[in-house]
Length: 570
Image (cartoon, rainbow, N blue to C red):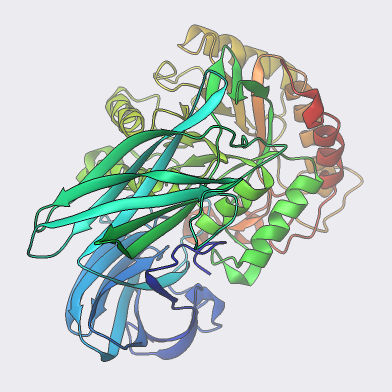
């Protein structure tokens, strides 16, 4: 399952889910599931290195093949037969490549995967979450002609009590001749191949275009959609946007995405959806589940959201990387608000000296927004969690990445979570200020007093008047460890810490949201974190890695559900 809905009605698409052959760099031969992490295999459960996946495919007619990978952890090199197709770095963003003039018959798809740590990998490195290995997200195979739709974005606009939208689509001509074509399409609450305009269905205004040989072009136009329903957290109405390429009256390619009509804005200290203030009651969530690793199937994604919503959450932060598109699809459907951020966590001075660091951050931001732009649930773009914001040398990188986001999308606010309290040098750069503060865990201090000190500093350091989010707080507990002394690592102590923090944050009108660290326990890199992380897990989840609830769940449920959506702060 590539997405939770059908992406094409005309273009032929095949999912390559199933069992692939896998050969480890030292010659070991295995059969592994795709999507999946190779750590699922008992002989590979701590393997770090290279391996090659093999899958035979069959083509029935001459065509161009477009290979779509939703995520490979963390470096991929792809071949079709003897043809090298592409290279990609970063486990958490999709990528694709085209092989032209593929003959009918059987072909061998080969993907060399590497999850090694090295100076060539500045984002995947020993960390407080695990960098798995394998083809961890779905793979698709598409048959395309010489002219095809590469992508499309829709930006909703609310003016004069009515909705319109700017539609952008990029079309590619791989052929050797100039081509003329027409773009048509529809917007509807349900997929309908007939494309007839009726109640709930809007026809897209036809666009004509001429493409020279080897040219790609982005078409952009604005269209009114009178009467469409708004997407709101309480009523997340979604529409299918379908564009078709036609020539001589015949459709030969198409692309479908799901969109919602909503605006995101800042009003003083408030984050607003469609002009209405929302208070974010969220969780930080890693893509990690027991022995499955980061290749979480849809049924377990749904379980995570069920558990979070049962506790009263209305938001999730995709710490610290872009998430699986299917999870974002579910957030769209449920009205869960999402803070999505580029892949980054922590800071080492040598990263600023490594020229690959800036490039790999830039590439991740570009791919994140390129592929996830249309998700109405995403209301915040984030970057560089807990990076060196207290270093003057890092300021230029923050400025570049914030500028890059605004060039790609001006409809969502930006932020980055800081732990450099009283030292951060760039609080004036993001639209929203976010800080990680573990009162009661790393320091046994008074939650309210420390929070007030941080809030006063924010106001003096460039964040005055901005919305403020407590992006991480909490404490660790090993599932099942109960202790009447309420010692650290006990479920009782974790519940106490969350209660003390939430009672302060949920009642502070200066805040626009809170995100508990974290939803579920996650595996960490043992080499660097074993001394501070029992079981080689980050144990701050309110549920463990198998989603068994700890005592803190009852505390969160009481406080999150005690402030229902109908009681939003104004």
